[in-house]
Image (tube, rainbow, N blue to C red; front, side, top):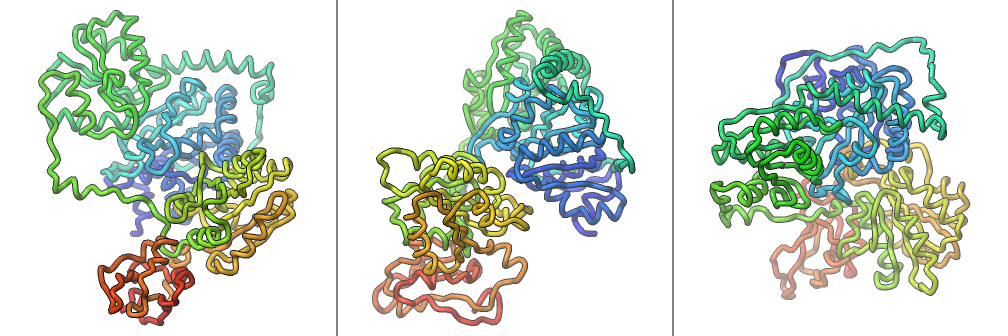
Length: 632
């Protein structure tokens, strides 16, 4: 049985080892979801990708699913909202910053409510493993008055989806399921439930109430009252939910309140030190479970309370307020008292370190031996061997001095070009921002440095196009360098509109007069074109085309022509390393007869793009035909 067939087999009470995101994808099918709308973003990407790859199998077992890779998160949420008018269960999926993109629609549609069940799966990224910020989207639930489920494990994430849809349908409200990187990207034993097949009606009469869903001021005022009343009813409904769990313990000097992934770190710590205190685990953090927490505090009126949560001190803020109202007599410790760090992911050791400050008698933190510490070496992310962006940036650096330009870059693989030695980025904040920032930079009076904005193909269609329109309209003198690798590569090669749309045509369509196309893998031919574009008086656009080498090799296999350093001819100038920093080129430690340390090309990493041969000023990197993929 293929892996996807195993994940989506219609069996219950069977246990599989699944990635957290695979478990959530399974939960979507167990919940009978008909429509999925998404824009890829780590750590959420594997959820829709798993469903996308399973579409043929799902169809073969009679499960009908509509899955859409939308152009951005705002469009995805709007489309999901529209689809939910069918009465079918609908899912929106994004990473945490994706909700920022969709926030305008989100804040209003919550007040208007939904017709069919609508769940937003929002994946957060504590410690910013692959993100530009570390925001806690629990604040959105307070701002928008929307229920939020917080699973502490992949199993809970899967199972909570059913409860989330039941709540959404009963109260006609969207619901958020909040997950985090460690749940999304860890593997665990997952117990399956049976699949719920959606019932698609052949003829649907869409009866949409304009008084509720046309959100003009008069209707919006009524919707505001509606959501406030609804929040109270949802809060009463959830007082008895199974997802807020009170665990009793036999050591009551200290009691704990925790939620989501933080529960796991706390439990591991308690197991390691042999403690068994009471714990209240919050599984639904909004509406805030006031009654449950009051009961818990009143059960232990003289204990000290410790609050353990990941990200912001949201739980702590509301628990402390509630404790004051019930005249709780014990001391309360949370982030503000140093129990958890002010940023980053929690770990068991971080929890241990924090609790030592407020929990007398805890044994000291174990010291990690030096030989283990040496294994924990930070490895910065780099552009892959054969990446077309590296070749494009080499051409840019040759055409325009690094010291005489300002570069606004964007979110994608190419962001990594901001690091030395390529240095192709001075500023980046969010998806699609490069053109808007570049446009602003272009209007700084007295600036003589050329302004360059860099954007990828998927990001261009996501939110880059409005920035380009703005730059053209405001006559901004800048070069937009669109690096088109024919892939949404950073998040897992999901489809994007570039498969059928042309960046060049779009640029011409919005009024750009200078539009050129270059071959990323022919940097010497690209240099004069970049130099010419920089001198253009208004907005100029260059589209650098070169397919992602990973995608190419997966489809076509490695070419039989590869590249080697002729060691005896090498003069040790290190140009190949200094200018392009390809991971496949490394120091060998070998000295040739001229006394020069020579680089070598690791044939197991080399993607055979040939950039190194083009860069070498002495022509000592040469191509050879080989019989197998790894060379001699």
